[in-house]
Length: 180
Image 1 (spheres, one colour):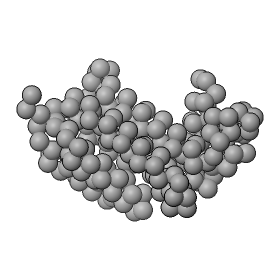
Image 2: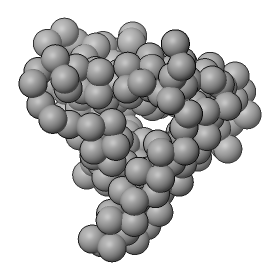
Image 3: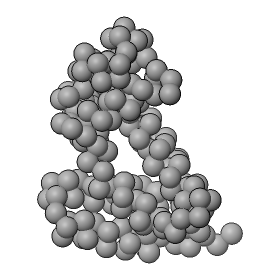
């Protein structure tokens, strides 16, 4: 694993343990087993690290969703997304990004870019599942996924997980089938 990936994985572990407040440069560099200068070379600010971890986390989830059938698993789109919304690291990451952008408005262009990238990454996943992927459909699903993730995180019980799965199933069912 290269240094950059070790840093991203370490940051994701720290997020899972205690949220964005755990992402200090000394903690991340210690967790990754690298010098702090290596960390700041790749990620000069914690906000940049958060954005990179978010991209890394989404790319990992997207790869799992896109490759489920290729590996012979019976994972459906709903199951894969539901699993992602249950991951507390991802929710803490979302919350950390929102807090960072709230504290520093100069980060908003980067956040807008990240959201565009994330939604662009959802399009082929939806298409491969035989669903339409208009910008409005993707924005709708993205909003539902974020809401489900936050509500599960706040409630943290089996009822919340079951409710989120039902909501995700309904949201996916609302998307039109691809007519091509």
